[in-house]
Amino acid sequence: MPQWTAFDEETSSALRSKLPEESVVEHTSTSALDYALNRQQSVVAVLPCRGFGQAGLAVFRWNSVPVIPSPPPPAPAFQGRTRTSGFLGLTDEPVFEDDDEKKSWWKKFWEG
Image (cartoon, rainbow, N blue to C red; front, side, top):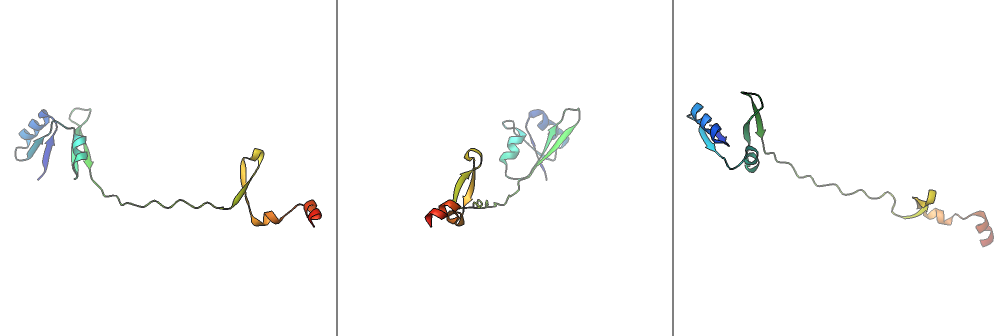
């Protein structure tokens, strides 16, 4: 059996006169939205619309959302040393071990 909850006196008296066998509860201290959000079960609300004799229907359901752990941050692609390069040194490029051994021809000539 449904329970009707009204949030003003006019609606509660209209419900009691039209549905005398149904239970009608009046909550004048809160709004329909506050009532639905504070209740931990499904609520169907009939809300007034602009036109005469029209109403809107809102269904509030509580769904359990599974907790998904966030993935770990990706590891950086290169974890070695970097050397500045590019225009004004605004970009970095990785320095590999082979690069240290490569010397220009004149350094190789004088160093042996």
